[in-house]
Length: 509
Ligand SMILES: Cc1cc2nc3c(=O)[nH]c(=O)nc-3n(C[C@H](O)[C@H](O)[C@H](O)COP(=O)(O)OP(=O)(O)OC[C@H]3O[C@@H](n4cnc5c(N)ncnc54)[C@H](O)[C@@H]3O)c2cc1C
Image 1 (cartoon, rainbow, N blue to C red):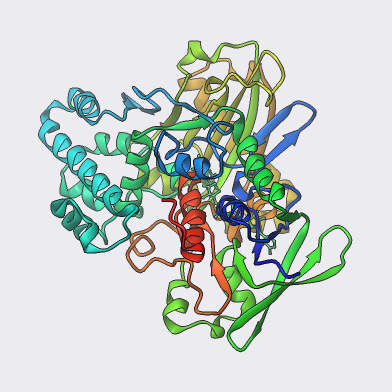
Image 2: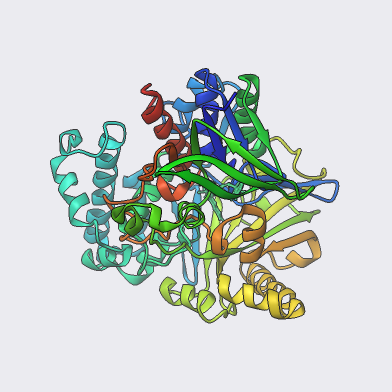
């Protein structure tokens, strides 16, 4: 019997969609190219002892009544998949030469902290933060009702959403005349977008910044448990998943997608899977290119013509015989920049491959949960994330493997030098494990075109009313991926659930 839904890829939006459909009694089958489920959210084991999540660090939308919680409740998983909250008084610690700021969900407290740092700009800071809060509330007011004017309960903020739709974060910082240092402290979450303020959509920044303000979380039993729990729902309801099988073509007949062709990456054997409906969790542009873009409507072709978000450099490390608490680490992330200007810092690393004064994020998941199953006793995991250029790394890897490895080593050393200068003087002495991932690592293990981090680049052009959604202009084919919804853990939970709602008619969000 053909499955009702054949799903290409097991990223988060696909797993959420599949779990909801399977629970509703539909027959679902997932085909995944990797050996592990989860896409960007997969967990891998290194040596006997370490478990690292490929990309996920912290998430929003998981508090009581929030998007992820509502979906988990619907799947009867809310008791099983629980989350620990980051320190609400300061879940992100922003550090730059001469200044530091703890970001809190309490906007008044944030205004007061920033005003103490920049007393001459207190009025502008207050105006900016309160404005951001209003816009965020307006987004909330229509996120469940759908994007139409009637759903706006706050007309003033609705107008602001419209007003800033084409703005970058830098444009709005400039309009509010915020001091450069305050801008840098507020935009230091840039690794969460892999874009600097001068390119980042103001709306994307508002959604993520205020999403974390409403609660930053880490799963009690790690991200692997979240993925496995979704899979359990799928499998308990007769859904199936096959691994190591790469979809290489979509078969179309008169504007209808009828099946996919896949290759088993272990045996080399070819397979054809027919289904009533096909859901592509793969990158939408790659899906369309496989089918042939001329099969799609003109308006869809335009939407599919997006640039990818920048790729990244990740270092997965472990330290021993050291109490990171004594060095300023805890239930928060640390975001560091050595340079006052984040646009310059980003360009130096991304365009000039110059990491001599790096800006990066530091995550220490061991502070968030008592579950230590990800590491040996007495050790702490510490991870570093920054931007990296795919084309540059791809060229190095293809032309000179030694130079490729040397560049990875150079970036990690530059980050560790900065950590030793600014946070932990004898960091290297305690470092017992390190491995790093480049843009080509992302491409190989997350199957993301050009090693992209968040799907389509989060510029104002891609974050507007005409954003790509689940519709493909072909029969029986639907997109279900960060680029056809929203990126991030909560964003892709939302994307999977919204597609479920559309196709099943059942409302859960
Ligand atoms: C460095 C980094 C850090 C991040 N940190 C965070 C964070 O802290 N918090 C947060 O909320 N979000 C974070 N994200 C974003 C988040 O991980 C993603 O937005 C989200 O996981 C994307 O899910 P998705 O459903 O779009 O699918 P994807 O994760 O893109 O999965 C697609 C799946 O399709 C499979 N696939 C692709 N092609 C084929 C094929 N031909 N055949 C079969 N299978 C195929 C892939 O193997 C993959 O499993 C981060 C991302 C990056 C890169």
